Structures are given as structure tokens and as C-alpha cells.
Image (cartoon, rainbow, N blue to C red):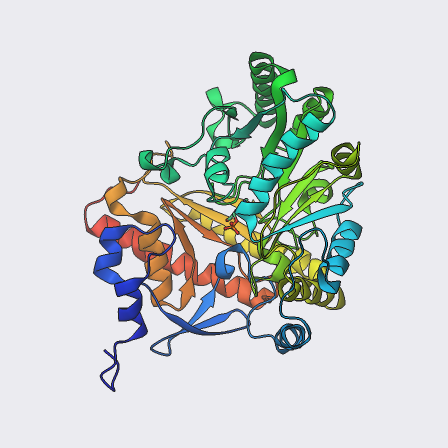
Amino acid sequence: MSADGTPSDWALDRAHVLHPWTNFGPFEAEGSLVIERGEGCWLWDAEGRRYFDAVGGMWCTNLGLGRADLADAIADQVRTLAFSNSFVDMANPPSARLAAKLAALAPGDLNRVHFTTCGSTAVDTAWRMARYYHAARGEPGRTHVIARENSYHGSTYIGQSIGKRDGDRVPEFLYRTEGIHHVTCPHLRTAPDGMAEAAFTDWLVAEFEAKIEEVGAERIAAFFAEPIQASGGVIVPPKDYLRRMAEVCRRNGILFVADEVVTAFGRIGHWFASEAEFGVVPDIITCAKGLTSGYLPLGAVIFSDRIWQAMAEGGARWFTSGFTYSGHPVACRAALEVIGIMEREEILAHVEEVGAVFEEACFGLAEMPTVGEVRGRRLMICIDNVADKATGRTFPDEVNIGKRVSDACEADGLLVRPIGHMNVMSPPLVMTSDDALRVADTLGRALRRVADELVRDGVRVA
Ligand code: PLP
């Protein structure tokens, strides 16, 4: 209850909102933290407490919150043209200019853009597009796709069926399994027989080739891969893995779809990570999140001229996919402004610099008693908590280690994201090196406190 007797926002939320990924028991008991205001990397809750947001919204508030230049651009666009649909006979200046800008920034001949509402609808569209493309070039039998275990590709029916994280799968949702295959997650620490990096890469590539052989290359439309598996726990693949997987795709006529919903727009220091970090020019890139720095919802499928030409060949054929809000002028104007700010303020170079500091400080936390592995690149880092460092054994679920660590951070004014037994960070790209050191220091103290509590409570920590 608020002081004036009206229900608080916390109470209204708890009474009426079904949040994404709700766990009903804890939600009924605790409700959600109501955030009222944001400025730069900082958030304020309804009680006026301040938090450093090392979650970065949800891998997205790259330029920080409360920017007047972005607010002005958005307000100006609302006054000029708040909406106009972009179905085929209409266009608007921000979406045309943004598509051209994305084509200029994307690798290779990825010069065509289909706007969506978010990352999930971008992945859905890429799945349709891959099949449409193959059918248009006379191979309608190519309907299957291959993805990886422990990947996340969004929350629509197809996105959640292509992705495959254990915790996401509830039987009631009936995922599509027909025509969707999964191969091993390229996480070196889980390599069979403790293989070294080069041997593991060979093994993964051989497994992929065997899967193609089993399904039949002539039936496979696309391979979906996040360059770094984000929500799966920031899995950075072995050095040559993506390049070699892309070669196998090319040899077999399979499209390589890079899901860059998290990795694009600076998160690891590049506009797009596929080519700049991993040497792969994909056929299709899906992106969202950092595209508008989280200020407005927007996703995009960026695809090659080759795909466009095949789909367009023969003239009067319909691509019956898209959304009321595809190419939304206000969202596209926000994205143009975000890209402009990133260029003017040299954000990519800033990420290189701050990312190096953040990596080093976070990798230092590997010494903590409950930390089994620290993974990641630049401003995308995961702390993997374990009960036994030698064997990698995880804590029992009831210890709720990720949440325990994030609660301990929250008490110290720092937000980190719990995902199962892990804690994941993707802070705004604009944070300073001092911020980076402070985040790692606060997290380190929280990890130490939680480890001490676990020992005190008799939960063995080895
Ligand atoms: N793809 C990846 C790699 C993601 O991490 C996400 C969201 O976290 C999505 C797709 C789905 O994006 P959205 O939540 O905007 O639908």
C-alpha cells in the first residue's frame, strides 16, 4: 500500500501481471522489484534505492538509459510520423535509411533487410525465409534445420523449438521436433573425454557432418547459431569452430543463420561479431536488442542479395510474412540515432578498452571457492557456480545458487542476472573502466559472502 492508501505498483504488478519466465511460487511470495527510473548505467527502485545495472536491461540497454538525444529523436519522430505501415505498397524514411545503414555495416553482400518486432520474430522469419529461398531455387525438399543444444533463439513456437535449453522446455508447450535437429554445444569444458580445443573442434565438425549425412544434405535448409551462446551461459566456441561449421554449410548448400540478437551492435566490440570476431560471413543475420539500445522494440533479418534474387526470381511471388509494426518509423528512427551515437562516440573502441578491463577483473573471480568457470568476451561474461571445483559438480537446485548470488549483489546495489546456477552480466557498453572494476569487486564480495554462508549452513563447498 502507498502512503495515500492506493495500492503500490508492486501490489498492482503482483495482482495482475504474468511476467516472462514466471516461477509462480516465488512470484506469489515475493513479487517483482519495481524499477521506476533509469539514468546511464543506474536504476532506481520504487523505494529510491539505486542499483548499477550489470544486466544491461536484458543484453540490450547498450547506450545506458535516459539519454536526451535519443529521447529527442524519438519525440521528433512521433511528432513527424508516429506510424505508417510498411506492407509492400508503403515505405517510410526512417526504415528505408536504417535498412541502408544496416546493409552498409553488415558483412559481405548482406544488403537486404526485413524488419520484425523483436529477436524471436526475426528468428521465426529467418526460418521461413530459408525454406522459401530453397523452394524458390528449385529445392523444396530443403525444409529441415540444425541448431545446437543449450542455445536460445527466442520465445515463439519456432524460436523455442530451434533453441534448446533444458530449463525452457515444459511439456505443455509442445515444441516442434519435426525437421529440427540439434548438435552438441561447443563448450570446451564439457568436451567428451576432456578433449583439448583442436580435437574438440574436429569432433564437433565431424558430428555436424554425420548429422547432415543422416538427415540428407538435400533436406537441410539452414544451420542456426549464436556466435556466442548467450542465455545458454555465454559459451564462447573454440577458435576455429564457427568458420569450419560455415565451410561445411557452404559445401552442402546449407544457409548459415547467425543469430546476433545479443552479439551485434557492440556487445563484444563489433557491429556484428560473426565476421569480425569469428571469420564467418553468414547468409542471414538476425538482430534486435542493442539495435535500439532497448529504447523501443525492433528486430531485423539482414540477408544476402543472393537470397533476395532467388526469392524474387520469376516476378509475381508473395513473401507473406511480416508484422503491423515491421519497419515502425519511431523504432527505426531510434535505431538510426543509436547507430549515429555509437559512431560519434566511438563506442566500439570504448568496448575494446573497457571490455579488456572487465574481462580481466571478472576472470580474477575464478579463484573464488564457488566459481567453477568464468566465461565470456568483453562485455558479455558468465560466472558458473559449482559446489565442487575439482569435479565441476553443481549445487542441488534447492540451494538456488545463482539467485543467492544475485540477491547478495542486489543488497550491495548491483544487479547481475541469475540463470540457473550461473550469473550473467551484459552491462551497458558506456560503462567506464572504474565501473567495470567496481562491478567485479562487488560481485567478488557477494560470492565470498554466499560461500561463507553455505559453509556455515553445512552445504559442502569444495
Ligand atoms: N535470439 C537470441 C540469441 C536471444 O538471446 C534472444 C533473447 O534473449 C532472442 C533471440 C529473442 O529475442 P526477443 O526476446 O527480443 O524476442
